[in-house]
Image (cartoon, rainbow, N blue to C red; front, side, top):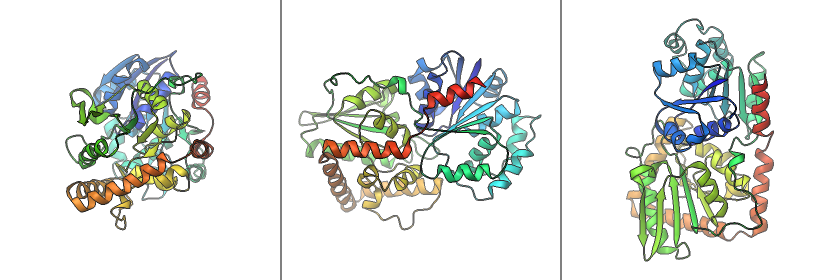
Length: 410
């Protein structure tokens, strides 16, 4: 079977999930299509695909038309192209409960039912033009053949709302959508660590954030890294990994013989480092969190890069991970935080910029960060195990391998 695959071009989360699914389909011809940060991740993990193509538009259209099936990780346009081409489409989604809609879900369903399926993508796109980006993803689910939905607080209510609409896609609730086969084996003893601290910033780039624009978060991180090396002599070697440090953007920050190595690693190498590094910090995305939990590690959440991180941390607030998570609201109250993906992310950019450039706010930021880091470092092994298990219990579900096998057996 020829399977065309693509992912939403927002950070590493969607494409990491797509890559995990692709590795489960090794008996098929797997063709990735996409651009930007999703394409960069796919190329860095090229062994998960049989072919990697860049581009959208007509290029993606031709690939979809040559496929037997399409897999989309939160890429609504790719799903719509599959529907227009008459190809079965599987939507993979770790944020199913996150997507906001300003009109009744039944109205979105009605628009999907009237979608011109025998025309072009342009006609289908025009038909759905009034939908917001989040509503387009929900429309893609309604049009999909199958939806693979990762468990998270609130997902049950969203599934019930979909079921109340009547017949629709076959929805499969799953546990973590991660590369389980790529997890380092649990041997008698871990490899000695190369680093004392791992800071995983993820892909970072999305509809607003970029390495060269709206990048106050990265500039704030860079300022903090220098202070970390000065203040924490126990962290002699720090690994800072993520999309912002790919290729020629890799660099090393040094102070008094201590180093922070900033680079972008293939995903399975990241997993190896998570397994062996004593202290792990991560941007609070669900894929990276699930990978840490699968390795029995309780990470400390970095501050939120975008609004989905705010959503994630809020919904995990009752857990040890959520209680310890760093939040920009420790320094600047979120009283006027817009409950909107784009506007909320823009607000976080402004907050990061204020903290970075205001010495008083930055001092408060460092104090709050130090307090949370000290509390995290002070956890006993039993407390860490409890923190891991409560998240596993909250976020668990059927294995993604079983779900994918069932979907592709039909």
